[in-house]
Image (cartoon, rainbow, N blue to C red):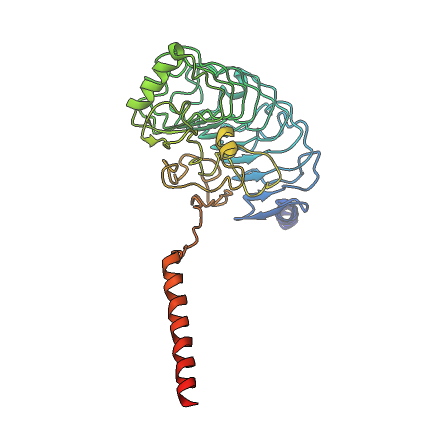
Length: 389
């Protein structure tokens, strides 16, 4: 009787182990969805440009990198919350109208460019203490509500090519790079930037600024680069523009795109002596520029409109006096946080006009002297011929 009981226990144990092996085998076969490609022990998953309208099944729970860009996803609410180890998420160029609810709190980098997001609510970012970079460029954003002291680890924020009319308030205080270019910005509310002691790169070109409040940049102690070109600055309104121009002459930051050509210097960028705007030197790669999407509009390095008007035939040609800022390396940008991140290598070399060597023109007196020499030779030949006869 004891032998039968022991045999039954062994049989049941074997069946249980066999079932576990089958389940584990199925799990191993299902950790990478067939429609995606996986690497790094199936923790790096690329499902981009697959025509997806739903999140793929069978994604491994401990993935670190997930690329869902260039699909037709419309709603991911609550579908990503169980990926507790996810560090980088790319949901760019889908059909999302808001940031997905319940995103993993372990995220470091999130890219949501090229969607239809109109506003950012306070709960969208309230719990992302670990987020270091956030790309919301090329959306329809008009409003951004941030709770004070949230996103405490955020270093890079890309809000370019949206529909902001004023710089968002309560920006995270540890930010180092902010891109608000190509919006509809008209003003910066007093005190909006006072907390940004670490901000080093601030892109405000291609907006609608005509003037700015006095002292708006005075608290940005860490500022190293500021772009202001391609804005309709009211240079004739000296009462409202002078304080900005004076600050630019005193700051140690690099100013790209000086608002007015009427001053000899603009920060550390020297203006050309002739009547032109100095925006031609802005040649560094834009924040968030990505070679994955060459057809998608992104924040771009630019030449000011007035510069293009002054140089219609060769907008890339810049001479020495116009090249106040030769080439800068983009710091704190996106897509560089993990070995699997997409990086962009962009040449920042400024092209210069090629010059042809011009030979000195022969003088008229030199040509006459040569003719006289030929005539003398002919006369001598005629005389010798006559003597021989």
